[in-house]
Image (tube, rainbow, N blue to C red; front, top):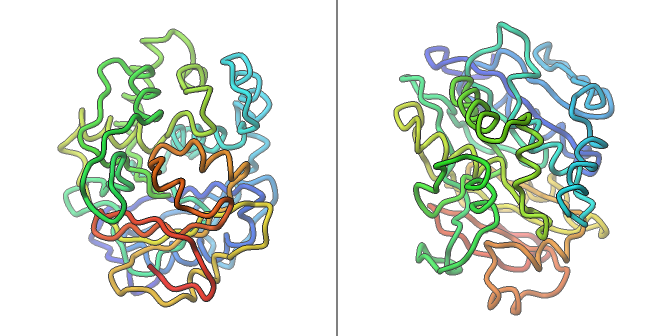
Length: 327
């Protein structure tokens, strides 16, 4: 058992969805979770279209093609909602995360850590505290001025989508909860599903897609939805924190950086996680991304890799240049 583990902390399961574009770094992601998670890990469920094996017997593969709704079902629902974007696989992973307890066996713990496959933890981190509270990331600010905590007025599609989905939902602060991982709790997830299905009269996944903002590539966010729902209705079951991290985002069309490159780059000691993300339709996503202001968008080189440094809750965005240095 890794030295990071504190057996007095609550046990959890881990779910890691893997898109084909992220397959190259999944070993680094998986190793980082097993090395740095301080909570005892009962099992790690890797969800992908291709088999994944590991020396650690806790790692289990879940065949993506066996999960319902499938990508084809989601694509049909998005088209019906008026979306013109080829992003069914992106919504598939969002729904998989929100419905993570449906994927697990009956003796799974009450907390599930969901981790995006294109990040790696670089320091020991606990995800459920001794009081059983899920430690949720505050994540990227929804409204911000580059390099400061100052709130700048803006509209965010994830907020609008969540408010349409859940009656009474509202953000509790101007931090999103988007930071490439989330701790889901069984009780909170069940109540979220119950309220959505009662309000819309259709299965959760259909309501989630129907209320997304179809004009945007990223027209809803599972992390924004869940984090603010949990904070609003179950404040006693969650604990908030800023987790300092640096992420590189880039197009799938270019060679660019790898997760190994980002792991090897010099970084401040306070950084707890790093990521290297390849986006489909990168230029369009940057052009419509709510948390990048129009002024900053005009300053950034078109189609260039970007470095997102989130340190103590302050977000800075700058071009990612070789040799890579974080932040």
